Length: 500
Image 1: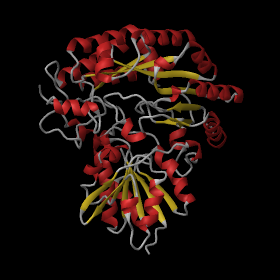
Image 2: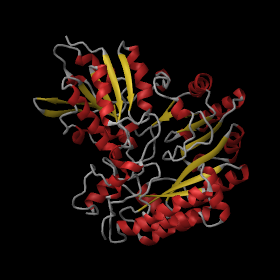
Image 3: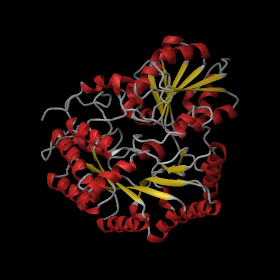
Image 4: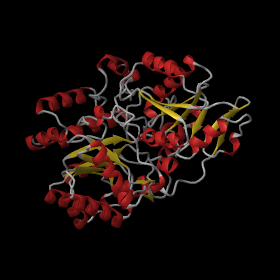
């Protein structure tokens, strides 16, 4: 019987290969580490990203630690090369170390991931139950991986994929994330200024996920593959207990709720907010990914009372046809305008996210989106270019219509978040989308000195720093991220927008 005692979580450094820096914990690692310890494993976390480790330093740590198994967690397909680099580093140290990859990237592209001989296993979707079962099987003399759902492995040199079955329904039964194994103060005690949507105003700051899954079926989203097409909710009491832990053990001063569909049950949200009000903690908080049609004036008033200072809504499009027929998302302009009006009256900041460049979308409809983005007059507006992800309707439509370049594949170095598109139709080119996105972002957000000054304040920048950022963004046609490491920026600067 093989001894499996020591497990190492290895998080790739997002800065490698000139990419923008994702400056936050990988949530799954903070949650899975205490679960594995509960099963008797010795757990070590190597956060190459937070600690900004070089590849040589990662190899040195692996060699010194000599783990039996290394789990590589990669949240975004954008960092595919970094994840595979980690697997290669592990095998360079010792080919007998078992490697397992999990996260959004391998869940959506397991077959591609398993082409890498340095990856021994992939765990699909939720790993809280699947990872311990895989480790237990690994320790057997004659392991049988065929009974492990949500697992990919090799048999006689061929990849075998066992589809995942079911979801974790009782989220309250899971432990709270454990951040103390990280250099948590370097992140929680630093206001995030350019943290890809996770900007904050006070520190320490903590993230809370109160639910998993989403009932919507937006054409561009891979959430059904990752977390399911239904919504699973933690109870209000369980969420409040985690907030108590974050306040009492980490001293947090700001919360960021990161759910896809937190407000699917408004009564549960009211319970959470009333619990915050009763506790009277010195907290402010913000919401990501908020569905505007689920809000009402009374709920917003309670949110404001309990410290909400900002919400991020996603109108997605200013065209009713695109919203309904192409994106498949509910909501309408009247609802959005009403929510923005209420937020202005309550002094809650509002950011709005839009997406342009869908197959079937016309240039005039894209312009309609820009007009609506200006009309709602929020504090910050962002435009993303529709980016195909594996397993989404958007990708399927792009392939069927012949809208992707002949050399398209998901493992590309010119993937830069949602700033660089790939889809071209008879209505638009990639270059046109990039130019429009960049200059409309600049025109709408900075149309008055007052809006410019508020944008700077909201992002913790001086007006002078913001002007530098604006200039660099325009000159790079939006393909610019201030958090890229300077000595590696030249790697990404070689990537030029595709010619028309």
